[in-house]
Length: 172
Image 1 (cartoon, one colour):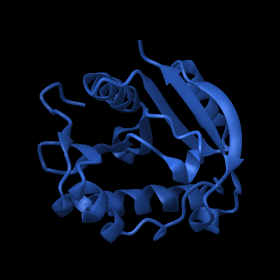
Image 2 (cartoon, one colour):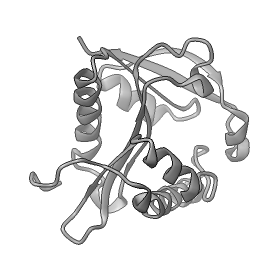
Image 3 (cartoon, helix red, strand yellow):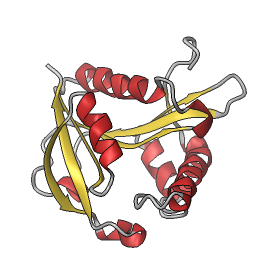
């Protein structure tokens, strides 16, 4: 990723591009038989509502193509239930396929940590499909600890997994 490319707050106008990237990655997962995302399950209208609340961040290259995106929220009862303590909850971390293999994911996670701390919060949390050992290894290597498995919210039951792994990392 170019050093000059800052992560910026997404606007509702970015929603279509974010949804298209998610669908592109979801189709890759379907093609690889990875039970995580499916195309169309996260519409641009939903992304636009979340972007209007300032929850999405993105990087674009010099052609305005997306390099990576992420959503950060402060409470997450949908995935964490009653244990949705204040934290920087990372959702929708996506790296465009042409940028895979570099440090884009690590840089997005670091952005999330910096953003979380700048908002006076010292805990990060995230979740992923329980049937994905690659992501478990990736996030563990970045200092996250698995706390438990939990049921996937029903609106995401399209893709063949019913549980998510809930992970946490203390930042301070």
